[in-house]
Image (cartoon, rainbow, N blue to C red; front, side, top):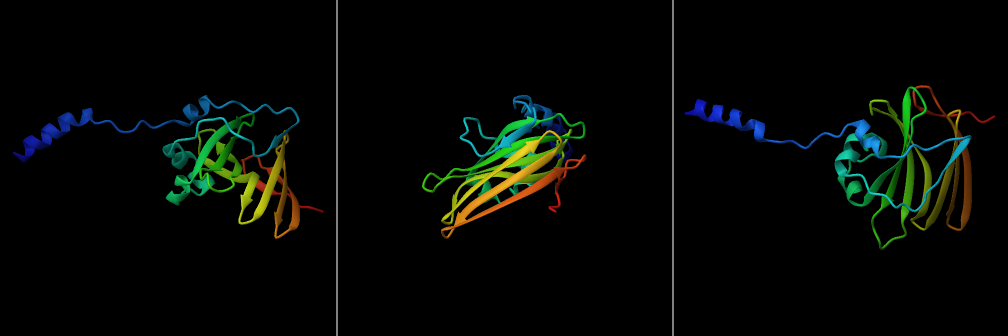
Amino acid sequence: MKKLILILLLANCHLLNAQIDSSYQLLLKNISEVQMTDSLLLNAIELQAEPLDTFSIKKWFALALSTNNTNRLKNRNYYLTGKITYNNNFDLLVVVEQKKKADVTGMQVVYLVSTKKNGSYISSLEVAVAGTKNNSNFNTTSLLYKDNKLKLDRKFVANDSSYADVNVYRITKTGRFLLAPTY
């Protein structure tokens, strides 16, 4: 009797369907290529796009966005807003994180995520921030140059004091963000 039940279960297994895995190329298919002539300004802007689903966020961006905490996914929307694929070794993806809470002043963070051509995570960097958090105003913008140099300009106001910082990063041939020395 047990063998008969096992045979019937195996015969009907083909009827079970799992969630279809989305490939990296399918994810990038509907994302527009960011055109770079000399440089590209990366800043926080108002979005009119569809948010990524939880499965895509966990599969492709968990390492970049620290989404291991499930509460982080409940309070935010994530958007894939652009791709830069001119490099032969890696792709750069522009991912935007936006808080969902309507009762607080919104915070928007833009990440530049480097991935291998197959979608494997390499590195990420927070390149733009706009919003208010804990009575502090944040405004960070970046300039990405065609030669894989990134200039990050941070400005924030905390306790009625203004702070500013400029850092320069180099993106290596393997897609890693390295802080360039300042002389």
